[in-house]
Image 1 (cartoon, rainbow, N blue to C red):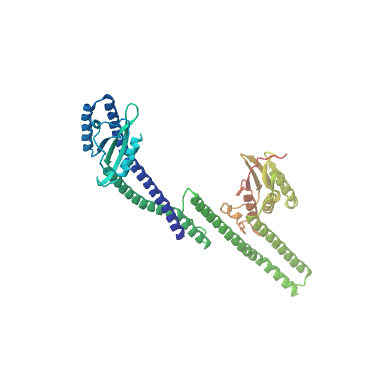
Image 2: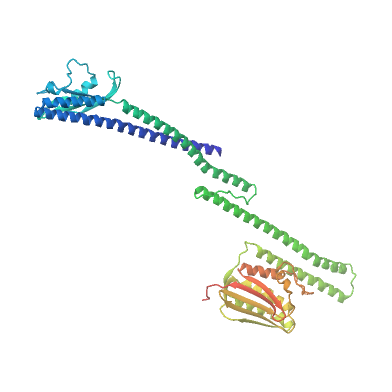
Length: 485
């Protein structure tokens, strides 16, 4: 991962450094051009002015007045350390008169470049050049412009020569400052590159470390990266993965615990009936019981214990399936009233044995929910079986269904053995048997199965029990918006 950091740092630094150097070179070039250009413009304007004034003096025949002007020009040149030559073009039809010139070229040794710009001026072109001058011992700018008469003929030229020492010094000073700026920019570029490289690579390192920790089994570990970019999105994905892994681990642990509970419950609950059956079977097999009536009684007890074990195993298997998150309900739109009536009809024979009455009442005949018909019927069957088991002989069991504010509520009421208030919550726990259970048969799983069915349908179940209203199990389901066609 360090390789990535240094690679990003080097690339980023190079980009910023190259950009800084290019900007420095560009501004240096721009500044040199401006400084030299401004000086050329200044000398050019001066030469043009002198050439124009000379042409005017020649046209107006002002040789005496021009002499004063020429002195003033020479004084100006001295003040500004500039040489101003006014020379005659001997090749002209009418060369400039000596009274209008201040330099005689005959016999002078003129550098080739100066001679070149003079010839161009005599040809009517404005030319300039700059170079180190041995005479002036410095870099000089030489500029020549033509002097024309009224017919347009070039009669002479104005040559202006000015030292560029100050301009060169200015450029050199500027280049020094620019070099310092480039150096500072390079340092800042490296610092910025280092900072941004860490900003980019540091989250990657933390995400990598988080991935290794997750791989080691610590699923609750988070990256701790909070950014609003692609790396932040990646870190958020890793944190989401962490949450999912925690959920999966909790699910696995719950599943494993359910498996252990299942086998523990089965082994615990089957131990007693198996021991009883083994005792009766051993007694019969050893021939200790010879009386036919007694033998039949023993066989009936064995069959009863077998039936109890069958019910227990069936309830445990149903409960195990219901507690499995992967278990899917076969949902459809159904009328709770019809399901309750179906379950009530199946209880008729048991109710007749205790002379019980059973009725299903409702406020609205269209009480619809979305649910699994078999599971809802099983729910009502469990609650009605409990009601039949604990009701006093000759009493009434009622199921009243209410539709109100988006909820379908079913209340199963019986009058018989009461459940103490402190046990209302406990009756929905595995293998819990209320203190009023007595010797009545049961696995202690029916209400647990009922609660799981209700919760699978996003509902609630609770119990109330008192002398006035008897025992009431209340179930609440969310109403569906669909209608039966």
